[in-house]
Image 1 (spheres, rainbow, N blue to C red):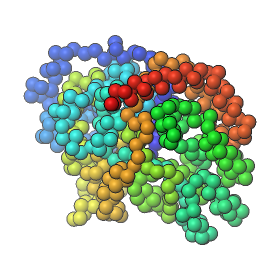
Image 2: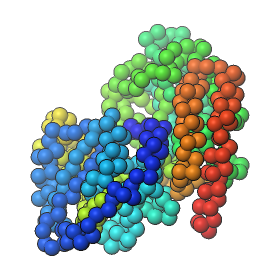
Image 3: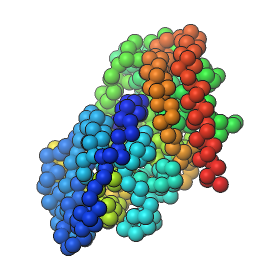
Image 4: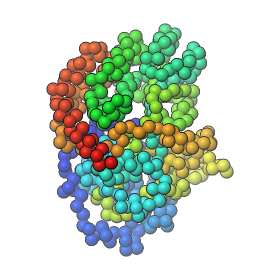
Amino acid sequence: MKKKKLGIILASVLAAGTFLSACISKDSATSEENGKNGETYEIKWYTIGTPQKDTEKVFEEVNKYTKEKINATVSMTQIDWGDWTQKSQVMINSGESFDIIFTNGTDYVQNAQKGAFLAIDELLEKEGKALKGVINPDLLEGNKVDGKLYGIPSNKEVARQDVYTFNKRLVDKYNFDLSKVQSLQDLEPMLKTIKENEPGITPIATFKAPVRFDYVFNAEMPFAFPFDGDTEKVINPFDTDTAMEQYTTMHEYYKAGYLKEDAATSKDSWPMDVENWFVRMGGSQPYADLLWSRSAKYEVVSVPAEEPTIINESVSGSIQAISATSENPEKAMEFLTLLNTDPYLRNLVDKGIEGTHFKLSDDDTIEDLPARIDGYNMPSYSLGNHFILHLYKEDPEDKWEKFKEFNASAIKAPSLGFKFNSDPVRSELASITNISKEFYPALATGSVDPAEYLPKFNQKLEEADLDKVLEEIQKQFDEWKSSQK
């Protein structure tokens, strides 16, 4: 799941400036003594998600366990999805003292570069040593910023793979052959049939036309490395034949009525449990169709829209960072190590209390109890190592093995591990961000004619000093690439 909006994060972090150096100083003597004199240390942890009513009850059990294991307790505070970006950044900017915080994507990179997070390489060799044998090396290497690691990523799917997901009832009803779907263009015959025969169904649940590149920020911004050809030269992906082709196809679909008229501006998230769509697009993982079908309460079926690829966004989707203001980073790392290696603690934090929030069967599978759904429904992806979570009764026995195979099959993006420092071009990026917000949604949903609007978009980007930003990205990339040899 992707709750963040990278463009918003980029703009908010760029605006934050270089405030941190004065905010994160602390009394070294206090830090040295705190938690190291035999007293139990309280770990202050901020993470994302809707606050749950049973959190206090669950963490009473968590703290009994962590006190025994590492002589620490944990105070966990969730900040709701819609408030996360603003509230977490204000908290960081203020220099508030805390130990651990959820982070991801551009937010992680920018805050690491500005000194908000602690480089944890030495801690990983000591208090976190057990993690090195657990977490996929691509996650650890891919999240280094200027050669240092600033957080512990959730050990789960490493790769990104977009898929086209279809309402299986309609696929079966019209006997569609999904094996023929290799591209956006291949959808057309099916979309036409649905439009003509299913008045209550929108053929496309609004998605953006896929333009496949290795993006420096995100698909809305005009900076990317190609997957083919000269993969080490950053380009403007909107100034390519691929962009024109994909946006032209989407515009044809829009004119044919396959998307809603307000596709460019609509906030409709197209919840899967509402059966009013035929095809949608999004990131997948092994057995995702089973999960989505269970959630939707009707069957869906997917086909790949691309190969699995390990990109910076996919490895940085969920990270727990140690704050530079932590009074005891060693204890924070001990907790993160326990959370990611100890099945009892990992399932307790994620699923709640056995017998209260979930039922554990003799075969080690679980079923949710009503108290979990109503009182302790946590976002699993954000919390840590997936491979030690209990499987649900309905899950395939080989689920985690399939995740590992999926990770192993993925190709690595050209810029994997490269983290751009945007400070030298901050004002240019602010202007380019605004231009992208103006043009990208309409082009990517087919709402406007790309023959007219794509050249206008690129012209405005040029006027906003696009080339200066491209040159700075290329310079930093070349320096980074040389340091890898």
